[in-house]
Image (cartoon, rainbow, N blue to C red; front, side, top):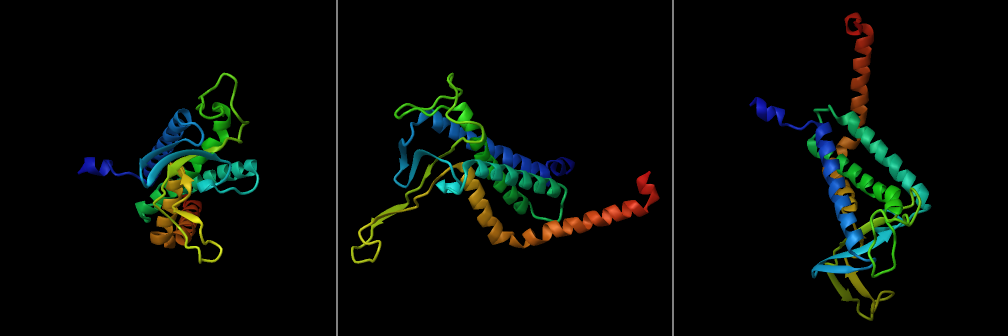
Length: 230
């Protein structure tokens, strides 16, 4: 019984384990793709799942928004905020582990892409296809610090069709579902946000507030209890 109890993960350990696993897997896949695929190369795993190596300067799923440097700094600040939030939750026993796992997955997703932005421009070159990138090239990387590109490779063209000619605006166009190309960090972040909204939304508004009240009570108790100061 004691052994089973000792095996239970605290919130802090659970979050650290999730973040470490996601980052290691995400970076391992990215480095493998970067060093084995030339830019734009495609490997068909199944008819509905392909590995397609692309890079982007923007947000998840290849979206772009504003300055690259500002976006990287925003990612760093956001990652730091989530880490601090998890640190605040590390000893809470009144919230479900699923909530902690979702916050950890969001943090891991943000950190996974932050690593690309910070380091990949320094540690990889960017050769012309069909050459593949080299890790730690002797002539240096393709960009400066904070200006690396995010590596994407997961592509799920689940189905596709041509719209009928009679349809306005889109008639005759070829449509592919699902078109975005993403990475494991993107998937970690996006899936956890959906799960968080569907199953744990009520904790978003209550966890922090309750925590602040409890800390205030503890601080007040310590101030008014001489023995606590000793």
